[in-house]
Amino acid sequence: MIFKVSEQVKAIKAYEPGKPLKEVEREYGITHAVKLASNENPFGFSSRIHNAVLDHLNQMNRYPESTAFELTQKLARKFHVENNNIVVGNGSDDVIALLAHAFLNPGDEALMPLPSFLMYEISVLTAKGKPVMVPLTDYSTSLDGILEQISPKTRLVFITNPFNPTGSIITQDQFERFANKVPGDVLIIVDEAYIEFVRDRTVFNSLDKPLADPRIVTLRTFSKAYGLAGFRVGYGIMDIEVAAVLHRIRQPFNVNSLAQVAAVAALEDELFLQQTIKATHVGLDYLISQLTKMGIDCLPTQSNFLMVDLKTDATQVFEEMLSFGVVVRSMKSYGFDTFLRINTGTPKENTTFIKVLKEVLKNRGD
Image 1 (cartoon, one colour):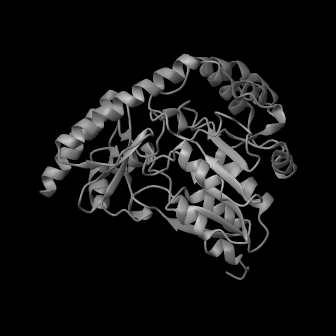
Image 2 (spheres, one colour; image 1 turned 180 degrees about the horizontal axis):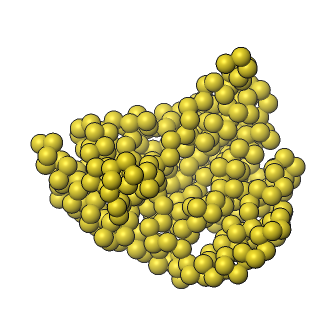
């Protein structure tokens, strides 16, 4: 290639999403594959969303409302903040990228757990910042390790709670001790993509007292509990001055009209959300019970997924399960060679997963 590529871009490892169902079905010549790899909502989405989207289709010749006013207003009421504390995005990934580009100068540092959501690192690198990776401790975010890595160049700290991929949490007490030691000019970005699924009431929930600390930026998404992964809509809640900077650089129509309409309808159906959370917990309990009976260790989880240690090459098991039409997530790229990550599915999908896993392990002699 004769064109010069940014050194930061050269250093980027491309994000690898969970294998799509259609791809698996084409590759293996099968139908009705089961996907438990991407922490999606297997129960679909509220019927209100279907109706709202259909009603809006005849307006798709117009640009979306740049401010996402109705969605922003509903979020503001839900969390008792103002409209100008909210930045919506094309998924929370969009807001992550905005934060990196807004607050990092070349060479500035952003701290994050290792491993963690790859878009933190990618966003920092494309903003010409330096990602500083802090290894986990006992499958959980090492808050002490992050504090040790803070330097005069630190501008951002990324925290995921609950943590993906292990499902661990940071408690209120743990976070408060941590935040008290973080310098006042460092933004603490708390990614709460899975917060709706938490059962442990000691968890730090940044929106229990929103905006109490101007350094805290909360990230949330409609992709998981609300079932809107394909619509791509997330949001951040933050200090008004931080939000103003992001609005200055975000694309004017970064959330499409149908996504805005879908998210508004999702917020109006609390019953569907609660049914999803309950069904997710039932599914998790079933999976943990069955895997434990099989002698497989499961990491404690407060999310809609769990990590399991097969004590063997999990990537080979993952590949063999694909031939049966069951898609899970190998954790090799995260540095956990013997682990799979599985999100809960429908009752039928969960039983299919257990059946296929038993068959694959039996055939391997594991």
